[in-house]
Length: 139
Image (cartoon, rainbow, N blue to C red):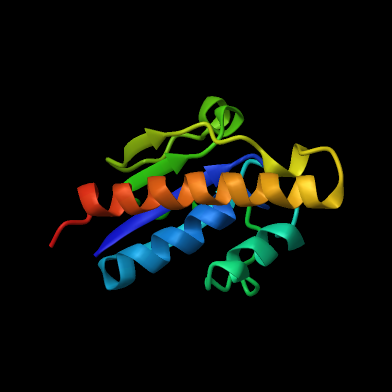
């Protein structure tokens, strides 16, 4: 079984969504963790848009990357440029991956426009997560 860490700035939206989808697609092939350079709490809108797609992340917690510094990760995935630039060194042979997804928490506009941005980013992360699992967690 592989250990995967997903990192973003605040561990509130993008990394939480990625953790949810990676768990969903990987099933029992990997243990998935997420963390942030900072902790901002899990964004309620991220919880909502994931629930719309049948994924419950309401019990996820916002964790600081320092909590996992001693874990033997196989893969470390950064989902924003800030996390990539500030990602600490992990004393493992973890393979690193990066994709800079837009931050839906910075969306502006009407409530509907903001939620649509959360859905757009969710769908981007969903596709990326499915592809990642298919390519890196083969049977």
